[in-house]
Length: 605
Image: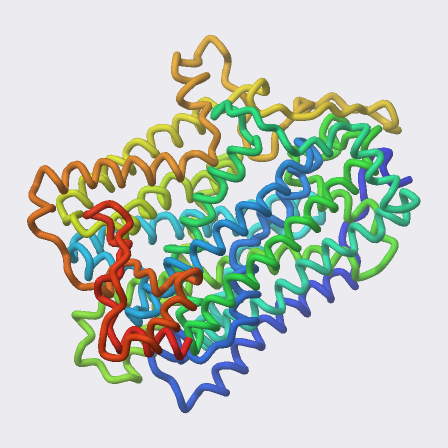
């Protein structure tokens, strides 16, 4: 009987057939794009899709690229253990999408860059550009290895799929369609994989509703179990998830991912117009909201089914990230091929993330490190070099999955990586985009300081995880189980390691190291900007203002000024619009450089 504990069936033949079919189709898209674009085999075509992509497929790719297998398996487990406060990330997605579309996209699109880190070279210096690129490569390789390994581990223990066979197969498929098809293959494969991921959630919710007698009963069970309490307005920065940590900290964390991460920047600058690039982020916002809503509903469905028999406490699974695969095999094994579709959904998330990472790593390596060496290469030689780098980085990511296998619990590390590294990087970009007085010395000082502090708190939180008082897992029970086995996983949190013995916890463990992981990014961003500005002022930044207007945010980039500039373009022929100061001389948020040419561009938009 579903929901009463005990072993569950493993994959049937039809499950393997469905799973394999999805993998073959993914590789087939790469082959199709390879043959289709054979006559246009240039570096721009390979890395940016020829800058001819449209908003909708790019938006779906943006959504899929970070909705990895960790999200497919981990987000429902989050709702099961902690409740649906995770849904508040919908507010974060809206804030992130708006800022990215109105501030970062116009600037990157105007500069026509391939690597996001080209901007750092234009604004500051080549050493800072290479440092930013190196940080991105290290972060992406590690994160991608974790993304490959974490779902493979969970699904291996539930479905019986061979762990290392799946790891190698995942990397091999991504290498094939990234190598042969480039960015177009990645984007169109992401579209297919997003549809499969969402279908997996819908199947779980629909089948659970049938078993429980409707969504109303699921909702009522969740209410009685305390899973619907989402709006916690406590301002304590040490609590894992509150309204403020998610909306404030989560917004900046996701902003650091979508605004400056090469995997995302590479997508929206591949659009054929600036309008398509902006629209892709707004459509992506809707896609993210739908995804997180379905993930929360899947988690609440899982709680409703297991409210009287927690699989973790009952010893049926070893950690919370195995809950959803266990549920799928428990209630869907009677439908041949459907569990295979769910596994394909989880691995579609993994495939989309890995393929995005490989293509982005190739782009930054070519543009930031190899471009000076390859000036005399023919287009064909550059294409072959891109393909070779795809194979190389694919192998690196598979190797990092091997490293992850020796790290124990990896999911908390996967979620914290972005905050620890992307936070200071976001501060560096904002320092350059908003403040004309910032210089290379200040930028380097701010970046190093911000990175050092975020690594300190991030690594400390991994070594000494916060206690249950701060993470607040919700109660579960096993009164309805057919059998109960002793287990040490009574209240395991989705992304934490077992707590260290209290006698070994240092004084900082319950204060500094217990800072919510969602505050890593805003902390790193603020430290980088403040330190960078102070050092820039001390080292003469006020006397050496950078005057290239294309490197800074302009009012004409923003939606709220667009119609104003249209009117000015009609009223001021040959005369620039009146300057509107924002009240700070060193802010680059003025538009003294708007000319007839700028007004004409705005009118066309």
